[in-house]
Image 1 (cartoon, one colour):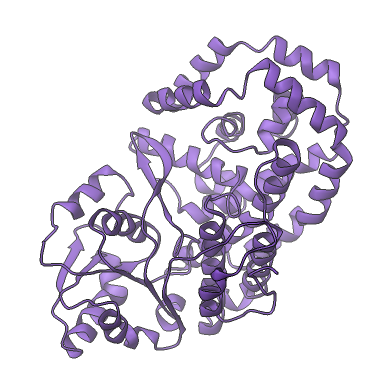
Image 2: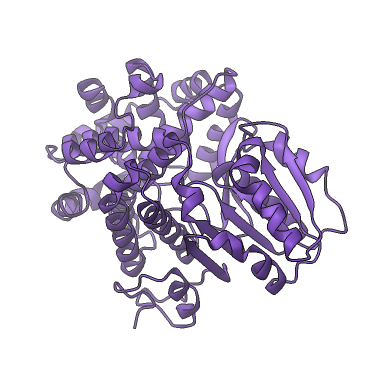
Length: 450
């Protein structure tokens, strides 16, 4: 018996059933203890804090999120008779990196007995790390349905110039007030839908990797991702109108996706090559001290690029001799220079990852290639089953006003091509660009579509 029910609509119903064994052979768990979503749920902050044993929490926000809900959270805590300390970061847009984690850490007070974060992506990522370091109970009051990391057990951070997933603490409690969410900046609403669009690709690539590499895969988790996708895409039109119910539904879908990452113990159910486009654009922008677009908006564009790649993969017929000759002529030293040129100081971390992973090892490649050739019809069927029509998804994103072309977010065509070539290198995950490298067709496809 699996733990996940397709009919489940209450997020809290997904928290406790983890005591049951899943059909995949694992016992899944979601460490979040309480979730409240809907109109006016911010009023529950005092009760939730008390139930988690908080008597002197710190409230962490930035200037924007303090205005959106932080001030109200502080007043509600005061009304509930709970002493608190406010830590409002002196920026409108903190970066999830060593600097801002350090800024919060240096404000640490041993009298804190809980952490309440007011924000969504970056504030949550920073506070999850601080909560993990201090082992304090942690509540997140979300301010935008902009990303899927609300209840994941990792923080998406920039460390040493490289975008990494860092193990951290999942919130014990989550409050998603639809009146706050619906009034978030439109870009953040667009980002939420873009981050969800990625799940089409992530599930497809998870299944393909399971087929080729034997990577762990759970169909129950994949089913929940598909359900969260439907919830979000069905709500897109009303979300564009700032409908509160639609904002809550999209937030719930994003939370479901985050729970799936907790269930699986990895980010695989929720991110694939499309995320790597975004990570590369963010890393290169930071290295140049330039601004970049919101993660979810970049991911939405990356998803459409990924669908274009898979359209080409559907037309391929594997050629064993071509693939073996391609890998035989692969120049590892030239690859290292390319990585250093693309990523700067972060390139050394990527080179170190390859030394550990050995994805370019010729013997490993030969084994993968045989599995790819023998399973090619099944790979094609997975692509057909999981991926939507690219034009349809484009229209879904346009409906909410989201960018759909790289040039709209300041990414040149040459950068798109370079990014695509580099997606295979920045994380230990089997994705479309790795499949094309295994087939000896990476550059060929890059030249054709980018």
